[in-house]
Length: 131
Image (cartoon, rainbow, N blue to C red; front, top):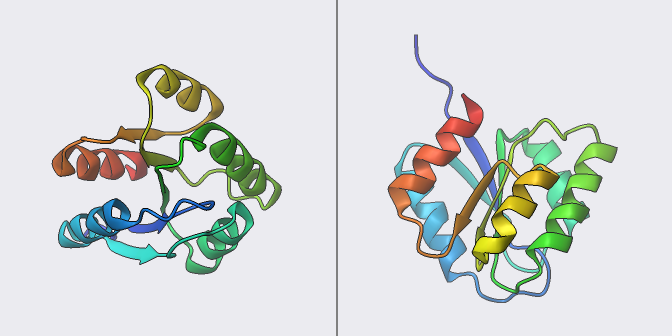
């Protein structure tokens, strides 16, 4: 029995223009055998939700370097719930202070990968989200 290939949406929400990390993570996930859809810069939470629906992704991953991870994640979760896709696991990485990890988990973020997280840990974490 072959496992289904994980399909992940990697998105850069908001006005954050730093996308090198998101691109490097997208490549690492692809090299680990996942199908990656990268949205590019400056996506709204509504655009991310629509793309996730159109692509029928297994996971949504956000890269946020702006420090706006709490309001962005809250807004995206609201859009996902309104569209009936709040069962898709949501992961976030980037500049995430340690004190915000519990807040993100409490609001429903299933994976939190602060800057400096090893590729292997991110890949394993994404795989756990879909098992």
